[in-house]
Length: 231
Image (cartoon, rainbow, N blue to C red; front, side, top):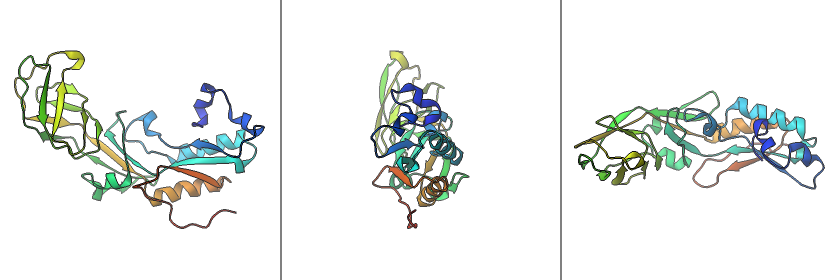
């Protein structure tokens, strides 16, 4: 199930329907907030989780049927952008600036890699529609905003650690730079959910009287630290 506040009218079932349907559990996602509001936002803001819990409790009469989905992952993307690149906690730990991460008010760890210049080798011939440049990209694989030294802005897909990328003119148009030796990356926002953040979300959910949680995703991520199971 999706966040109920604005999504249930898009589907065949409403949350109220599950009061009479023969189902054991109903799982509501309470994460991926950054996809709606852009990089720089928490994955699972506490206020968002709180609102989602209130909503589903008002719709589903048996709280033992309710499962609230929580996050265990990280992401990178340019500040305010919507090309979000997901990474495990282990992958986030390998990124520049990880050691300086700070905890936000939603108990999620984050840091911003300031905009900067990355040196590349290779050149664009005047009027060319594509070229291969060599670059060492230290961030998560994905689409990022970069600017050529002549001011052209593109959003190419980088592969973490790759030595080459293909640069193509937008819409097949010609690239105008006669030569370039650098690209500028936009500020990159990085965030991950660790055990402290996961425990915080679980405490909030259990305080609402909901005892079941699910977590996405397994492998390379933190887990809840030992807590007394609710009865």
